[in-house]
Length: 501
Image (cartoon, rainbow, N blue to C red; front, top):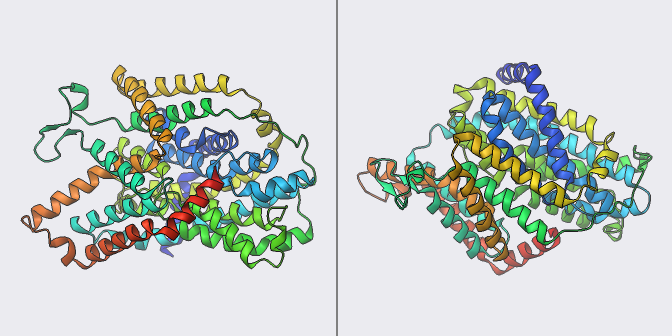
């Protein structure tokens, strides 16, 4: 009964006119950036973050969330039609989806992706609503030592799900934590790593880091590797799947939803892992494995369900623990903070309308996506004809204006350029910027709880292993680190990311 009351509060908030409008704007933009290769939801959320500061907190979060799961939805369209995934998790969809399009079955492939995404999004939203309150209640019992171990565990797990070697991912996390310490000491106010620059006393601006690493750096990378985009499908017909198609997609959708819901809470690239895992499972248990790679509709329905379920459940650690499971979730934490809300288990009690309104908006967004995507397929394909040389100056200009408008400080624009170049250099060196952003966001939380735990224990470090929750999390972190460097795991990660690229 309490859950129903909470959902009623959520829908009453989410169905306000301005919230429905910005939910629509979010999923529309998300679909567009999912369709356009080389932009992606992380860069888009980073660049749109500044303009949401004038919104109500719940409105801003609803729009930003819509961009994220809308991109998971839209990435499948170009993966199927032109074999060019607009979003990383849609890479596996292209394997069979594009083959179906070549055979004149683009309609059923797109419909399977849309139906699977809607079902998965709905089920995952229900799972989020059911799981969030008990997890938040448990999280309220955490002490500083437990939070330190939890953050450390999240950072270590993200190593296994990052591109490149585990050592490079660990180095990126360490660099992110180091950048997070720039500014005044949290307890003494002593300046650290500011190099006598007044602008650094308050720390490095989060928006500048995010826009530079994921906006400017991605633009530089895509300018270097511009791909020709040609659609082979000019008109999509027979959208509704046949009876045989419907029979074949039911089980993959359900299995993909379950896998995605479970893997979405993992730090790093849980949505990417979910889609590839779903494809591997469907191929292994299929009675027609020879069809995979040649146009099996199960190879579209399963992965699309998995990545959309993962997109929804990645909000669970954000809303209940204040921990990001994905770079976009790190940006969402930034949105919470700039609106004066401390992300974590207290949000459900302190801001119930925001908490439940955000959850309810996800179901509304999934309905809007279902209504938007199939009728507008022609529009999405035409968008691919826009030259990237026309797009990127507008994107950079928009990002620079948005960031400057936050503090009216030209230093923030210089920071965008610096972190854009840094991000590009890191990409060229085979390092992924995502762990750096996670380390930058979680570094202050890690330091604060480490020092608070040591102050309470009067400098006794054994507090981290004598508390049961902390000890268990540290053991899991150690196990995750061992697993990440195992040769078998390294080879599997290399295969997954090679296929993704």
